[in-house]
Image 1 (cartoon, rainbow, N blue to C red):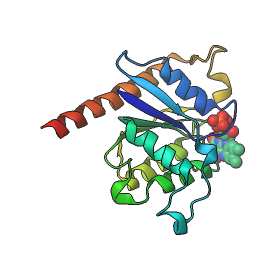
Image 2: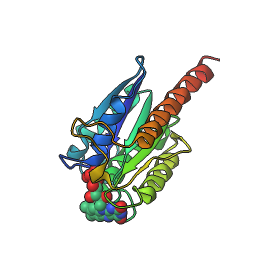
Image 3: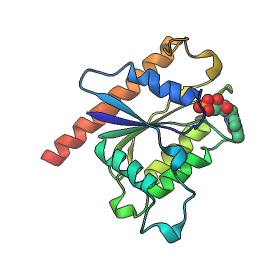
Image 4: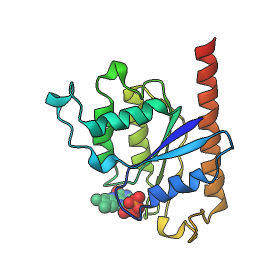
Length: 185
Ligand code: FNR
């Protein structure tokens, strides 16, 4: 089972990318997590181009199509998701009928240096994913004060946050298994 992990941050030392890397340490043996690294290459959405999508967009769509589930970790920019994440999701949403996100199990987590842990951004990301037709888990994982949340080796320092991340992965993999059963029935 493969989870495609998408960080909404382009920053080299991103806490959100670190959160996804921490998630990769918590996987059951049958699950792999692939970190998507191409968000920076995606141009601004242009509806004139949506029939001939740029190669960077095709790569993202392919990566989503090849994954069983998607895990998004979003920073919060001015109480919303970063433009680059929204932009990428807009590209992936077109054409809607064949978007690889349709019916795909998806989960959202988020880290911020503030005290609320990107709660507004997570709600926003879930809303956008739902609009595209993904099966979005009814849970979030707010990681506040992100500067203090990681050990130097990348592990999470707070046990409750680590448990929450593990529970998110467990629920996401259960959603994939459920979807497979539905398709096979
Ligand atoms: C922020 N940050 C922020 N944090 C927050 O909790 N609520 C917010 O509304 C905002 N707004 C905001 C806007 C902009 C433009 C920036 C650059 C930053 C702080 C943000 O949470 C912090 O920079 C995180 O570390 C960003 O995530 P990464 O890059 O570490 O993954």
